[in-house]
Length: 523
Image 1 (tube, rainbow, N blue to C red):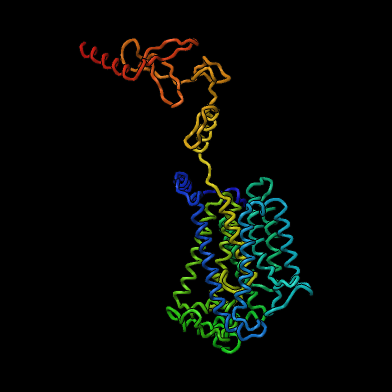
Image 2: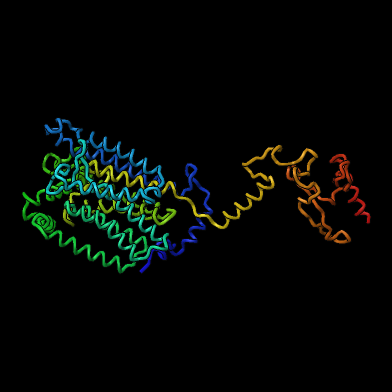
């Protein structure tokens, strides 16, 4: 059933009314329309605050662990310094993505190169030389001493490829629905299967949920989305129960006290942290659980440290920061110039928010732990790099958005073209006298054209008598003033042109006008 061509670009009810109101806005921020700049600023500021907050909490949660470890050189700021290096790299990558038009990434052969590179990196994980096993999964690749997770960067390519395919389906009438679904299955199914084989169920769930959000915004029928949701849920249940390790995580979620010193230890220590924090927390740097009680306190369970040191107020405040980020991201998606930009901005925003919810729900015990960190806040170079790159894509959509043209814009442009042809200048666009095209023969003669041609305004004089309805031709002088013929006598000058004689001076004209008024009164 074709859907994208008919529904993806359809405007919601009342969109034309909002567009007309938006077109009349004149307020700008730094020379950019407010509708674009306001969410962009809010997005960047919210990300900056979250990253700064994350650096503070990483140092607080990791200082004791790194101070007592010889592997880190007994440096309490070891993890903070590494996170700062990753932050510098991420800012460079995000800035580069924001400055380049997002359409370049999603059109032509470049998107194919990105997809092939992503597949090669994901396959490299299973090689005996590059893949590294950790915590029961092969998720890391080490190349030239640099260790990273290809699945984190696969998130960017999956979102871009999905948006590019939908854009192609909308614009290409030769692509039918069957070809669309086949292309989506291959382009998105292969990377998801490779990520799931690591295994990395957390990233698979996050990407699948993000694609569902993008499909809903693209206009996919609800029956298709509902079927995909049911199949996805059944698949997650199957994967969660197929081996002992996955089943243990489910049982830990249901009742961590069955094994308080084994599988349920980390989750219980997180509960202790939340309980100690209370409403306002024990203060930044005063956490007790970070003293080797809470494993991975600076990564997976940093939310528990936030709850202990800043209390309920701190945890809710962090969620409010992400809520502000989500609002700005979807606002940018709403004003994107095409369906590809809408899906990229909405997909990147959704992925970051979904990953946040997956971590928070696992830490508070309402879903199994997945090991996915909190974007911008938890320690992790690959996660920070990929999340900042996602922000760069969102900003690219905002930077390269523009207000839609209206009929008034077209009329204004046509009037401008005609005015420029006739030498009329607008306010703010002064035209020098020498460039106005007047010939040296005198005012009123247009250079290169017939001097006798009538290029003035035709004014019809009102009143009664024989002069009623008589047409007079007036001309615009250099100041743009008009002289009407009934205010003076018309006489022919030396060059043979008709000129309006207004009298020798202004006082004479006023005196003659008073005389005429007295004569009329006498009558």
